[in-house]
Image (cartoon, rainbow, N blue to C red):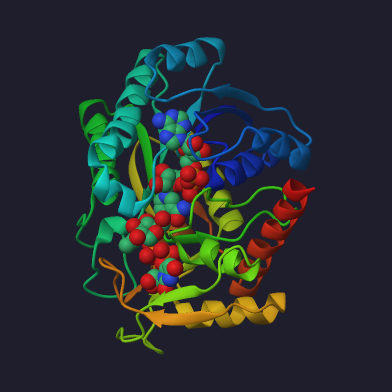
Length: 337
Ligand code: NAD
Ligand code: UD1
């Protein structure tokens, strides 16, 4: 079975390609490299000892997408390609709508053309906005608080509408909580080009002394120690969930929604302390004002994924911190020599 992975050289996409290949799927990647590097294709091959077909280009480019479907008999698609920086989406909403929604429309038009109607889509826990209670279940009210979040909600709606119009579609909407960590080989991981927005890549850059100090955004939240609580999930666990979702969409029809998290919440201070302890490295920090739009706490009820997909996150927070740092050190050594 051949799976097209859009955004396959990105952080979650690359780990998913590894898991797909190791589960016996063939993989075709399309990525315009706006937030990743082509070398990732070689690392995926190195880890798995399997071949991968790579197309450099934009999912919004209909001619390219038609060429990909013409040259490969695609059985299903995992659609990761998208822009994901919340702050940037507020500054450049049209860029986000064009890229994140335009890519989905073009992709689905071409899928229809080639009668490939099976798709797994990368959504986000951000679609729950400010949850009214915890843990978060899939049927909680949805709310977007910024253009990035709106692109996720609209894309979910578009895929749902496709199924309503044509019951041959099979759609899995995966709502990720906070992916961190890296492949244990240290070959692939998260490597933002600019100053990171998210907690773990920022901690890593402070630990490697590329940034001076971690700013902790507020210690007056209604949480165990006042700092924000999130459901951090190892990216390899998350990648494995995609394989289960592909197995499922290949054999069913309809729309299914899954929360992908561990079900446990950790505070910013707990993450920092664990990172320092397991990696034996200092992470200086200071408490600063809250970041606009942040919520107190967010963690998943992932029971449905366990029941339906027989998937459950297994990796602990210590391993997530270790693997994030391991990748950063290896990456730094490789690129500085
Ligand atoms: P990433 O930026 O590492 O990967 C996305 C990839 O898509 C990149 O390689 C980028 O070059 C590519 N891309 C973007 N637009 C494209 C286009 N139009 N055509 C072709 N390629 C394009 O991000 P990630 O963390 O791996 O996230 C993957 C998906 O998961 C995204 O849709 C993101 O919104 C979603 N998501 C991520 C998180 C997270 O915390 N990382 C959380 C929830 C949801
Ligand atoms: C953020 C996005 C969310 C997106 C997700 C994955 C916002 C408001 N939310 O989620 O839409 O789906 O990333 O891309 O941007 N923190 C610090 N210092 C830092 C960075 C973060 O204290 O330098 C804190 C935050 O206040 C939060 C926690 O760490 O309590 C996690 O933050 P982050 O990694 O940015 O993820 P989210 O805010 O959950």
